[in-house]
Image (cartoon, rainbow, N blue to C red):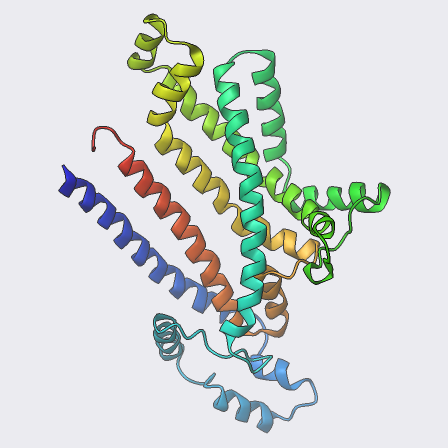
Amino acid sequence: MKSEVSHLILNRLVIALITLLIVSFAVFFATNLLPGDTASILLGQAATPEAVAGLRKAMHLDDPAIFRFLRWLLGLAKGDLGTSYANDMPVAKLIGGRLVNTMELAGITALVSVPLALALGISAAMLRGSFYDRIVTVVSIGVISVPEFMVATSAVLVFAVYLKWLPALSSVNEAHSLADLLKIYAMPVITLTFVISAQMIRMTRAAVIETFNTPYVEMALLKGASRSRMVLKHALPNALGPIVNAIALSLSYLVGGVIIVETIFNYPGIAKLMVDAVATRDLPLIQSCAMIFCLGYLLLITAADIVAILSNPRLR
């Protein structure tokens, strides 16, 4: 049985590696399809054709695309993200501090949204059919229907423009106290929590309700187990796999949500860095940022699959 579990986990890891390779191929060639010429953008409109051709040759932009892809892929395997075209600096150095900021934002959002979503989802499942359950369901469906940019724009209008409680822009460098940090992170965290919590609530509620309908839970109720004991001891352990998958899928939405939120609030994270790099057609920087987002998404999904395998009683 242990060998079967190990085989399944190894299979998930191999699939993740193959997926990452396919994604790297897609990211490289998609970024090379961006309109405009990198050398022309860097030199400006006054550049002569000879200067543009010389820069293209110096940057190896005239090499066949497949050779440039293999060279870039080999660099990634060695941990070399390349050199930024626009800043003439190592991409890893440019990304370093920005990645920390994005991880902080994602971490704070997860600390707020996951407990909130689990509490609402589990309590709604326990009180299924009640007025509370209907309110939670209607609100979560309504929040799912609202796109991230609308939530962020509404937050700016309400809390920054009309109430003037929070700053419209989130500049981490201007924080000098805990109160400043709370104000800076408040609106981005509120926006991202709205984006990912609603789906997590719905999926958690569905997973717990499905577990409630199993024979062993019904037997526990017939034997006189309290509702709280039935949830904590019987339902939740067996719903762990679907719940972890719900958390991982919801947190993976941070990949898209963070790009919009960092842009609207001018938050100095890796997503804002990637958006700025698109304007200058800084291909190594765009590709590295995109691969970091893809890697984060794959890690979340793979970790959820492994937890689902390990939490399956039949496999144990």
